Length: 211
Length: 222
Image (cartoon, rainbow over the protein chains, first blue to last red):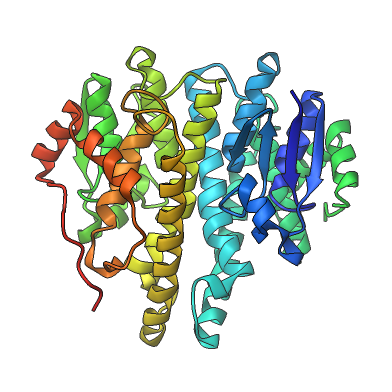
């Protein structure tokens, strides 16, 4: 059965793209251009009614939501242990994923990038945007602290959290945030980029921001 | 050591409370009333620096945060209860799809309606933030309804009560709050699921203990 990833280069779908490549699975990456609104077009809404990327097709099944897709890919290659076997480590993976997906992406970055989703007046949108930038910086500082003394986010091995962390690092670079100040986070990004599968996908998506 | 749930009545920690009850495990509940801002007390911030509920103190004393992680942890702790599908299965991916969408989609939408002050300190901005929030809530509820309508299982992801159902129950209850208003999309599949969920013994036990009844009337928005 073919695996098809619907993605936008540089978006949070980068994490799923990286994990597919890391896993050595046979997959096809289909670009859904969110800048021209392809994600809101009828054809894509049949694939994902939420109009969001990433979505992963495997045979007749379509899976949405990055944490679910990353977990599903991990389940296809259980020997890689992208999702740890031990219950507490698995729960820590989920804790990281939900915090990154909810607090960092859906709250902080959404406010920074799309203040018009949250407020109507110009003044309120400016405040929402500024608050989003502050929250992103707070999250980066927290990530930096948690990575201190650790090569990877959970345990001593690469898990599905690590490619997701890289996404937000590259976004920080794109938004001109002082990523060099977050030394442990930066080392994590460099460690990620040293992996051949990561470098290959970063190049395929033209993401070069390591800061 | 018994697991301890830090819980605020009416908050999304209700989903974890029901999951613990359904797990058959021994557990303690520590009330952290967010309405009285007890979640920002120094004692609670030492437990969870983010000042959010729920948090779960595990049997080894460590703290686990983030509701979907707590729900999955409870489910995985008692695999024979089937509160969450086994890791590595398609059904498990469906469970995480639900947990993540409810947490980062629907919950965040409600936040704009219930707590506009979290987004802007300007009182003049509140109406606009609430209005945008209501649009997001309606859109997200329509997505939930659409997904439930095409499922082929009795409950959200299987033939039995799962942590996805207890989480869906929280946001069903929230949809009746006055600030949300009555002008919601039709939710027949969601309502039918909730009726089934509400008949589950663990849900009945917690509803009685927390004095919750299923609401029936939506308030028109003022």
